[in-house]
Amino acid sequence: QQQVKQSPQSLIVQKGGISIINCAYENTAFDYFPWYQQFPGKGPALLIAIRPDVSEKKEGRFTISFNKSAKQFSLHIMDSQPGDSATYFCAARGITGGGNKLTFGTGTQLKVEL
Amino acid sequence: DTAVSQTPKYLVTQMGNDKSIKCEQNLGHDTMYWYKQDSKKFLKIMFSYNNKELIINETVPNRFSPKSPDKAHLNLHINSLELGDSAVYFCASSQWGGGNTEAFFGQGTRLTVV
Image (cartoon, rainbow over all chains, first blue to last red; front, side, top):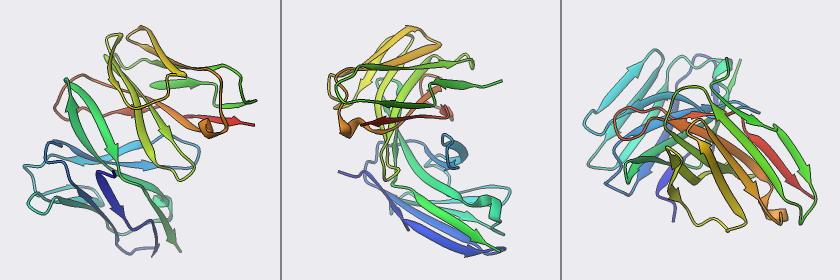
């Protein structure tokens, strides 16, 4: 059972455009929602994260919008650049016995074209 | 200075062999993880250790055995390798507990079983 659903699977955006990736979760016990960026041949790296008591968080060109009642959150990349081309994963954290367990979405492959 | 380092980066081996992947982190974290990324890039947690104690053990075949000699190291040993074990394995680390505790990932080990 996929607890975090992510869409779209792939996305092509023109340089300067807005990239939007959506995620939905089922488990209301999740308490932290990070987004990870992964380049080919590299490990995922934290991009931006939000807690469920906040509706929006912005860091530079990256914004997370969070809708707790709908159990949905999204990543917006403003002024998308070719260097943003990567795979993006949303995730949700559940605390298991005090440890962090990240449940990942299925990933979105973003390509930003010139 | 690499924060989470894994060796080897690539591993090609025959079915039935036993192999190990090593992981070390120099971030002072007390919790370490193994994640598996399949051919569709789906990331799933396998194990989590806190201060050398197994905390999370997902439904992973018992051919996979993690070992944590100290809190800075978490190795993964795989017995009787199967074709389906081919994947990229990521080690990660974080601090224990809640809060905005970022998980840092290694560069991954691409395991190919032939």
